[in-house]
Length: 155
Image 1: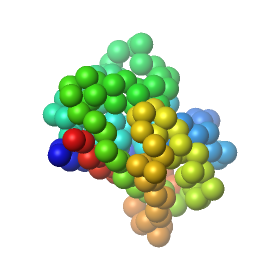
Image 2: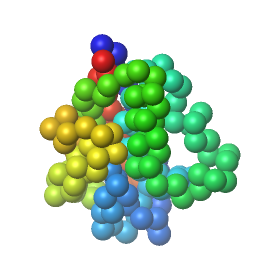
Image 3: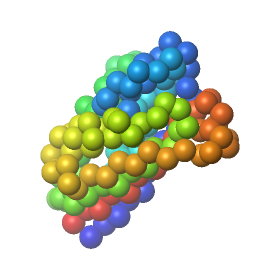
């Protein structure tokens, strides 16, 4: 068994779509980044890559490469999952936590779980996505940013 941990954070910017776990959430701001800045997909990607000792998301899809401008992070996640399988590992489960005070995400978690499971090629019962607030503290609480943490178990 192998365990990996992932983390990602992005600033929230006016005029950017708010995409999380492949779900477009209606909100006036969205994560700013070179790709679609889906922090949930990025954190899970890094957890998978870390568990398999295959590097990290930035090394595979660098923001210095224009081909990844605006990239769909769920496609990047699926690519990382394929690389993990090619290295001889099976994805047992992932557990992720998104930290942001607004927008409220509870109504979107089911769709996020389904999207992540589809990208990973595993059952949705093996994917956990939780949304937490930071009670107004820090960049996730004052509205200037969003963060996600993830762990992945491989065998």
